[in-house]
Image (cartoon, rainbow, N blue to C red):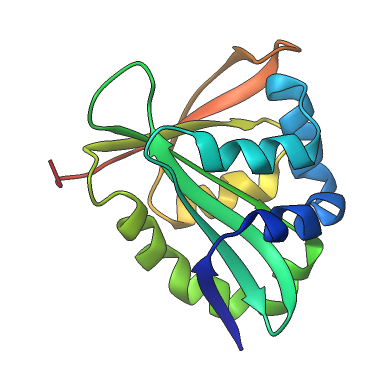
Length: 155
């Protein structure tokens, strides 16, 4: 049975070489980082909350939220997973909306960008109640990304 626990840097080390190809491409297009650097950076983001999805001893994915550096009441959620997320897909889909609500507790809006090639992530974001907005060139490679947002009534 999968569970969500507080993340550690060891989880990042375990997950980094196992990330889904789509997540690796998104990281490279957004900021040019290596997967390990993206995962480790999550721990130092402003007011970061970082969690790990585990199934027994298997690290399936990591996710979290941090404050937007450019505005108040805006949170920046993220998630990176291995292909093993498919092995817990029903359980994951049952629980993910509750976790999105938890991530958004202190924000009025959650937002981030998703690479246009990351179709699975876009479908999941819509499932979780996010609106996938306009597409625009973004990141170090100026590839196409979609803005996704979720307005909340928490603040």
